[in-house]
Image (cartoon, rainbow, N blue to C red; front, side, top):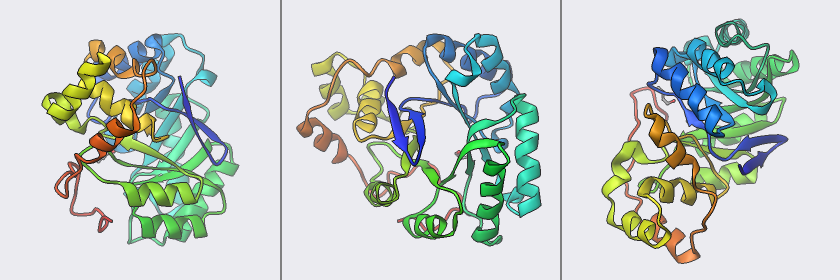
Length: 272
Ligand code: 1BO
């Protein structure tokens, strides 16, 4: 497994996303993923599955220290005391003394960012998490966050796949030594019948999903594909035995379109 190194963190290049996984399915998929070699699991308070992620982690038999666990604080807990309390509640649900990374899940313009980041840095100093970061932040918000944070921010987790150009956000992350972690990296399955990805996949004997994930990892991005199907877990991790050429990388980047974003909400920031 390759790692993406960022401001002191070593983030496995492929992780398991757990958005929309719940109950026994979630615990089973997490357990299987870890047995197959995944070492990075991504959850969030709002996914309502931290308990099952913890169950899967324990059932896998994989040593806790060998797994990079991320959770995210929902925006209604951004007031300083709430933030600390809610991280402690996440740890109780996960049944872990600390996680590897805590992210602010989305920007919240109603709470001063300085206060939320102050509380997040404090949570890190208290040992509740080894690293801190943000998610769904735009370039302007990254700049503000970096200037305000008392501890290094190790990543910005955003939607990223071949249909969505994230060059500006990637450049901002690079400038500040932060990793970009890609959610929805296979565009919620929309890539399955993409002719460009099928053609490139044919040349490498790989599926379009594997081509997408390889394209991300080759940009030093960490990707967290989600699946509820155990058979897909192996497919998503078998991407370290081939390399895309510069031309193939460019052909995949050219698939981006202004309508490529799949996850948007009324509370989302004005995207770059
Ligand atoms: C509302 C959740 C978006 C992806 O983490």
